[in-house]
Image (cartoon, rainbow, N blue to C red):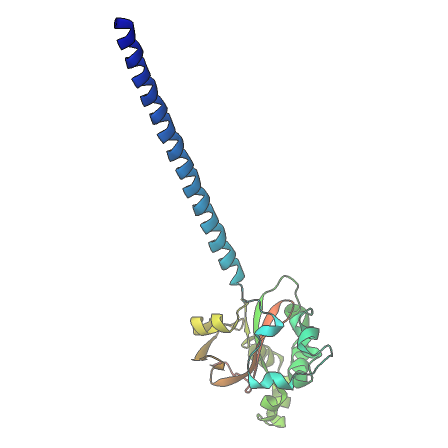
Length: 217
């Protein structure tokens, strides 16, 4: 009888130990699953953050002015996407005066730096024409003033439409700031209307605008 009772006690203890071990294993598995899920969440968050770098694709462009971009040339959307921003602009017939000004100021190499990340607000040719030829000639002849104006159009960070709208105020390479307003595809920068935005180049996101932006003197 004593042996029978002893065997029974041992059986109960063994079952209890097996149950505890099983629970511990389950907790560990649950912990591992939780850790894995957390890791997946972190990876997803990091991936999402990495995508918020202002880099756009040709399908992201917006604005009625995009229809005026050339097709099937180096100045087209597909042509500009692989070129650094100064080279991309030089192939675009809408930006001839801007390109001439950039060359006159000696900023081509700076804008074309492979490791640079810019947001560029590029006035199209009629924007310069609106200033009058005498004003344009005077600015082109004054390298310091020309450089100040041109760098006022450049933000030293790559941003897309959502980025500039959410920031609202953008610091420029020149040192001044730009005010961005609007919603949807109706966006203005210091009052200048964005005609075609989110244009991708190799090192910059470009917004073609309808006015030349003038920094505070």
